[in-house]
Structure formats: C-alpha cells, structure tokens
Length: 276
Image 1 (tube, rainbow, N blue to C red):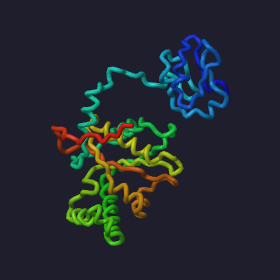
Image 2 (tube, rainbow, N blue to C red; image 1 turned 180 degrees about the vertical axis):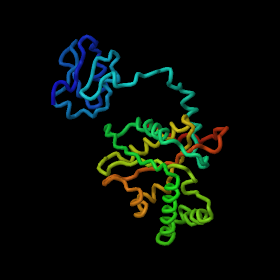
Image 3 (cartoon, helix red, strand yellow; image 1 turned 90 degrees about the vertical axis):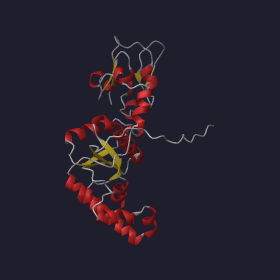
Image 4 (cartoon, rainbow, N blue to C red; image 1 turned 30 degrees about the vertical axis):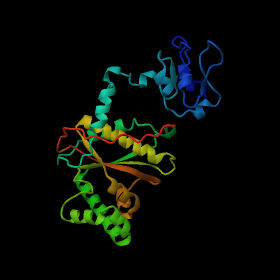
C-alpha cells in the first residue's frame, strides 16, 4: 500500500489521459487540468492487474509495481492479419478427427497453451489452469474409462444414452474404432477452481483461442465432448485425472498432427441475428 504502486515519468507523460480512460476499474484520475494522472485512494486494492494502462500509454510513461513497459512485448502491426485474412483463418478451422501417430513435443504443446492463455478472463482473474495428457498410452487408458462411463449410462440412464448414441459408440470402441478420443495422441484439459465465478466461460474462451492457434503450428484439434462429460461425472476418471483440490475441468480438446489436409471451406448458414 504505497504510492510506488504506480509510477509516472513526468518527462514522458504527455497528460493525454488515455491511461485513465482505458483503466477498466477507473483507479487512475486527474487531480486537475494539465496535471499527470494519479492513483485514486485505495486504487491498488481495486486494480485487477490487467496492464491496460502500461500497454496503452504511447510514451511508455507509466509503470506499475508489478509491470513496466520493458516487461511487455511491443505490438508489431505488420504481424496482424487484415480483415480478409482473419475471416479466412477462422473459416478454415476444422475439427480434426484423424491424426498421425507421431507425438507432439511437449515444448510445442506448451507454446500452444501459452498462446491460449492470452485469452481474456472475467475480471482478469486468470483462472484457467491446464492439464496436458501427453502420454498417448495414458490417453488410451483414460479413453477406456470414458467407455466404461458410457456402459454405465446405457444401463442406468438409457434415454440419455440413446440421445447421445452411446450404445453405438461403445460397440465401435469394442471393435477398435475410437470415436471417443479419435486415437488422438494428446488431450489438453482446461480447468479452474470452483470458486472462480467465470470459470466455465474462461476455460471455453481459452480453448477457443487454442483451437484457432493450433493450425499455425501444424496441429489440429477437436473438442473432446464425451471425455469432458465423463471427466465431470464419472468417479474413476475424475480420480485418474487427479486435479488439484477444488479444481474442476471445464473443457477438453484432442490435439495432434492432422493426418489429412482440407482443401475447401464449406458454406455455413447465415447468422441468426435479431436487431433491437
């Protein structure tokens, strides 16, 4: 609780007020016209550590107790895709269900997850935690547990099992056809502590970032819906994942090197929009 929580260089500050305007929780204010911004009383407690003020200052005049301009990567506008490239990137994303048998280096998966961790979180909580199941044999073992959950559902909740075609899925699995985890070499699980109020959406957003980033690294992904449901409700699988106490999974994706390459973008129906 010191004034050093925010430091502003008077020789650099041009008093444009951008930092104060961009602060999400408005902890920077102007004492008077033509004066430098200042931290409001109790501002260090309200700060959500997003770094917006440091990031947006055009003259690199402001620094925080935990963040300086030198800690940040400069924005390179030449690396940013234009509107056409962005639309093409998003439209070409496909759910990959056929993977090469080759594993992906742990360092590459870590890079992918680090990129996904740039996703926004509620109140900048940075609530998302990650579990990477890298060992392919472990992926197969856990997939078999998902099949066990399906067998339980077929017996105990047949209506739901029929709705999700679990009987057919298990039958295929028993014949060596894995439509549960698609013989993917790896699974990435997004988790968060139960106390995080925006845990589910934070994890879903991070996994969406991961999916969009993966193709640029030569990787493919597919949401592992059956795996995620079983990991939520099936005690043997929950125990096998061994997540930290109080932490729950909120989504999982299969990851690997795509076996095939797509050549065309199928059309999608027009967005259903309501204007008010």
